[in-house]
Length: 312
Image (tube, rainbow, N blue to C red; front, side, top):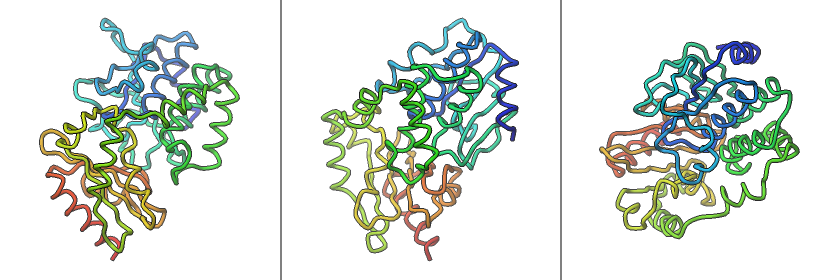
């Protein structure tokens, strides 16, 4: 692991940057990659973001100015908000020179890693780099980092939110982040398909351990019947935890090829990352993820037993 000063010197010393986001990219990895790309360009560097094919329409307008040109040959590759090598998208075949992250379970797959696990979002780390490298924030950086910080904290309501997170948000707002537009688009606008999908998720909710464990399932059939797309799946992991009395919530999403993606959320008393680590996943104590190569019903049986064994 390196320090923030090491990271700053590295970014100053190199050029020809390609920034990589993780599979099924969320607002934190995308906002951070775009923001760091903008920061580097303000320094006079050449920088692009690898065109992750899973970028959803929600984020396309913010990512478009930064996506890699077809003839670009990178000299320096940086992974942003990527905790493990297997989270790098298929088709992105580059040796990672530096990883900037905030996951405690980071596997140190890059040549060098700068990780701040105390941060709720990787955006908080990129904010520090922006101030050090650019001498301050412009409106574009503020918008992109607000996307990163707000989405990884569920608009500042998740348990990972800290006083430092709110301080970061205040800095971004003061620098011109358009929170009226961003909050409406990211948190208060949903498609009809998404709302119908939510109704099916709640209808199929399973409860265990006197209602302390709540499991939501999203199948491929549900996606097809509602007409929901990947863009409609943002933040589905938060739904099951809304139930009164819930302390551990699990969202199981069926993917192609027999894979079930598991998103685990918990109160601070329970270590979600320890459960996900059993399946090669990880994340944070109160928010982690993994994959189980089994149908949703079997995946639910496996994960619930592991949670109940841990509680016992």
